[in-house]
Length: 73
Image (cartoon, rainbow, N blue to C red; front, side, top):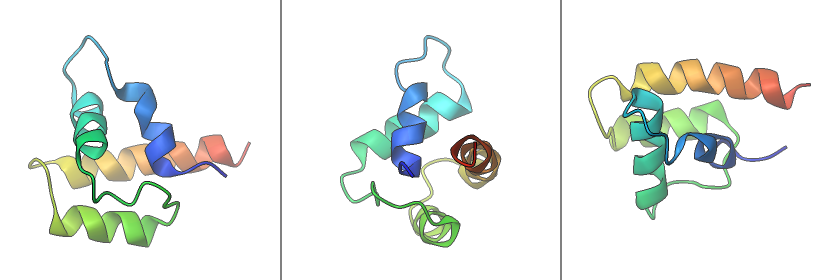
């Protein structure tokens, strides 16, 4: 299973400045982000302590669900 970080890198460089791009760009620039993590708990805890923007947790929840669906195929 690839990491959530790897999954999120598809949103980097989007021309449209949306929440997905903002979260992916922040993850890329944050050298402490757990880049190999696949666990919801590990990732959400990190985001709770280092929240990059107001609705980042809601964006993460939505994208993590999509990540799980894609990885289970």
